[in-house]
Length: 155
Image (cartoon, rainbow, N blue to C red):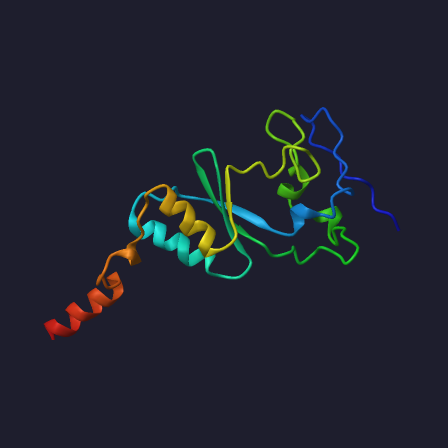
């Protein structure tokens, strides 16, 4: 049985064909994260990207953590296994608030300012920007170790 093509939100003036890009939007999700402002927060970014299937990207002033894992409802054929009851975010994906097509099937998709897929790429960016991270400080122990040491010493 062929499933109907998704309908764009009411405010969207264009048609969006979700069957042309291999369901790229269903193969990851990205969460906006706080813009890092100090060495400890940049060290967290290093920890995030040290995990498999994780990327970090920057668009303008905004930072994102991307988890590259497929939706559990994506079928082997690349269609949605729960199409009729899919979440609202899936129904609206691909359209910006003004109704402009903006998905992986559009030319404007993935227009990140910076995109990091591994620790070396992130550290090269940080070094180029003159940004230090917490673990660069010589002889500095982690806050957890410092707290544990001070508790042990106070006993």
